[in-house]
Amino acid sequence: MKKYPFDSRGVTQWLAELYSATITYQMMEQEHILLSLRSWLISKFDLSKDQITYIATLSEDFKSNLAREIVFAINNHSPITLDKQTDENRTGLLDGDSVKVTEYESKKKQADVSHVPSITDVGKQFNRHADGQLMIRIYYKRL
View 1 (cartoon, rainbow, N blue to C red):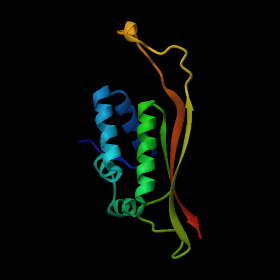
View 2 (cartoon, rainbow, N blue to C red; view 1 turned 120 degrees about the vertical axis):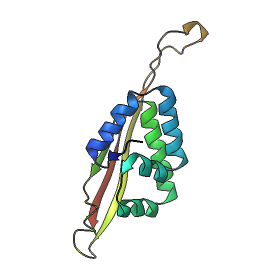
View 3 (cartoon, rainbow, N blue to C red; view 1 turned 180 degrees about the vertical axis):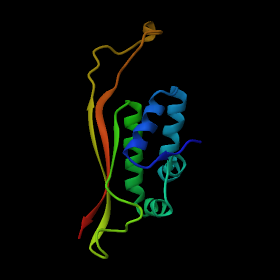
View 4 (cartoon, one colour; view 1 turned 45 degrees about the horizontal axis):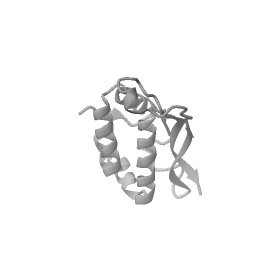
């Protein structure tokens, strides 16, 4: 299985390949994300031991919410951006004066659908999606 660098370029690469894959593959990817965000990140991205340990420190609620936001973005082929301002070789700004922060910002706007497809629409393309984007930020913040 191909692993991507855990940076903005790697996320962009993964997303481009995912969005060009079959719907079945995209659904399998979404199931894996929802089942275990940590396991999915480890299998999909090239992470250091410290990064894997850090993922374990995130609350289950945070990981669950983030997983749902990622799946929503995938379902709607929305952009997902990683803004990673950390270096796994550096533990902070200075000893004892910073904390690593992981947060996300989701902007969703449901698209208006004037026609709901029915059985007579079989074979026609139906493109209903929500506009938006998901931004994931990882950075150090001074205490």
